[in-house]
Figure 1 (cartoon, rainbow, N blue to C red):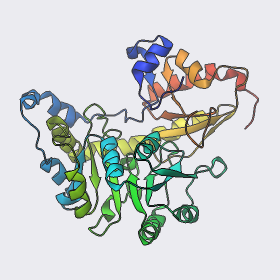
Figure 2: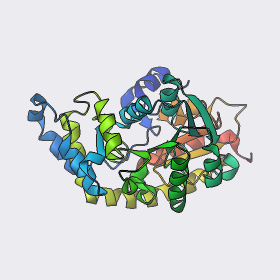
Figure 3: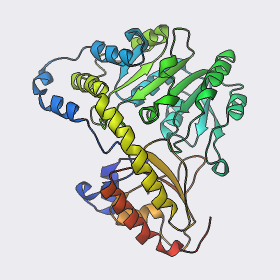
Figure 4: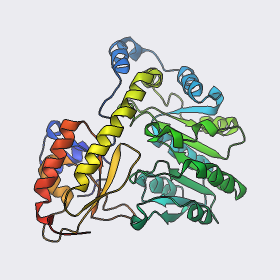
Length: 362
C-alpha cells in the first residue's frame, strides 16, 4: 500500500479494516500538545462568526505575522495552508528548470510537473546522515531558475548550518535562481529560519505553516514572506476569500500564544531524545538526527517478513511509509514524536513486528 501523504486516515482505515478512531497516527507531524488552549477557547466562542464574510485581505492576521519578525504587513501573504502558497509561487514563477533537494515533500514535484518544469535533483545521502553540503548545493544551482528547499527538510529533519544560509541566498541571487523556502517545521528550530531576513530586495520567498506546530490542519492557515513587490503580485493571482474568517482569527490567536510556543519547544527536546534512544536500541535500526518533531528511521531488509508498514498497520499504528520517495526506499519510514504514552505503544508494536530482525546488522 502506498499513501502519498501522512495522515490519510480514511485510506489507511479501509486498507486495514480498522475504524479511524482506533488508529494511532504517527504518520502526520502534528504537535500532540495542541491546539493551544487559547485557540480552543476562541473557537468555542466563535459560532457567530460563521455568518460573516472573512476579511479578503486578512489584515489582522498579516499584521500579527509582521509583528513577529518584524516586517511590514505588505511583506506578508496569508494562505489556505502552505500547499496553496507553494502552488501560488510555482504558478507565478513558472520555472523552466527547478532544483529540488531530495528526499523531500512530494508536493514539490507534483507542482513543478504540472507547470511543465524540468526537475533536477540534488540527493542528500544516507552515508552522510542526510546532512546538507553548502558547496554541493551551490554547485547544483547552475542552470536552474528556481530552488525549492524544505528547511528544515521533510522527511530527514536536517537543515543547512545557520551561517551557510546567507551564502546560499547570495549565490542564488547572483545566478538568478529564485529560492522558495518551505519552513513548515521552522517553529521547532527558529534559529535556522530566514523569516527575519526578508527585505524588499530579497530574491526568495519564505512559506510558513501553522498546521504542524499549532495543530491546526483542519482550518488551513499559513503565511508567506517576501518582498513587497512579490507579495503584491502573488496576491493578485490569489483567489479572493482564500483564507476563511475562523482561520484568520484562530491563526492570529495561535501566534500570540507565546507560552504554548515555549512549552512545546521544551517538551520536544526531552521527548525526542527519549524516543531516539529507544528506537536506536532496536536491533537493525538506525535513527537519523533531527531538529524537528519527526524522525527518519532505517531498518534492516525484511525478506522473510511482510513490509514494516503492513506489520505496524495490523497493530493499528500508522507510520509514514517512504518507499516511493526519491532517494529512499522500502527500508525507510518516518514517525512523529508524540506523547510518552503513545510513544510507548509505538515501541511495543515495533518490538512485536521486528522481532525476527534480532542479530542482524546494518
